[in-house]
Image: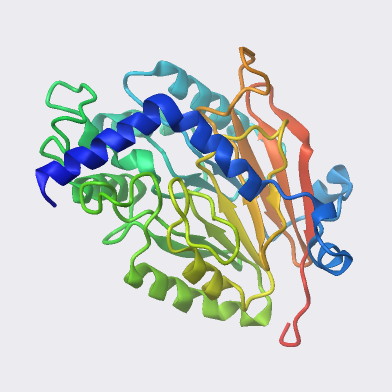
Length: 355
């Protein structure tokens, strides 16, 4: 990549941050918020979530229960992000129901620096937590924008840094060996963590979108094969998807058509994304456009306020319970340790001939 081309891409990116970032996030909303009445009756019956009795469901023993904590944005220069993570981890540690694992859904850090990961490790080590997994987001690559003095500099980017350095820091933190993606079977439930594999140092055209390589997508196709029997598969991505039939642009998954081609044959796939920082209390987070169930998470560090100028403390995450016959997805407000009534879905699992 020539330096001239890199700077051109950097300037365009910086313009998005300073002038168009919020508009870009707002533009995601039509892709994500899809009301049930926009579907045909057949499709609505096929995909609609069934509202159950939360107390009754939580009283049963699930196969697996986990928290998805997205967009922590931990930074040595912004203590409020660490404060909000403490709220989440205190709630999880004292939680009234079991938590078998935690998934960190991208943007673990704000800049992907070694110091940011050290702060995140020190924070998490203060609590007795279940096993933790995760995937990378775009901010976990942001070290390329920082100059030798730690200042944000598009003119000198990549400032002697590489995307490979960012991947290695993430993998060292999370405990992955050679690639930033991974799958785990926990108590018979399959968790599949897909990761953004590069950023603007290696592929300037990627920008704030998510790029998955041929290798990662082939791996993903392979690990999905056991789900022919109807067992649920929980897939974690960071950036959201574009509309069906499209590949993604900025702030979305680029190779989305290939992603959908891989998951479409399976009947009980749940895709959980982050990145948009949308508030559970003000927007619908269950997208019904797909053959799979897609839920967007809020953010621990930077969930948007409901109203402009509202300074109410918010730090939100997603609690998921997988049962033999259904999956329960619930929004959690860590600031006051409360459930969010508008973010409460019970999805019956479909039976397959093999099941």
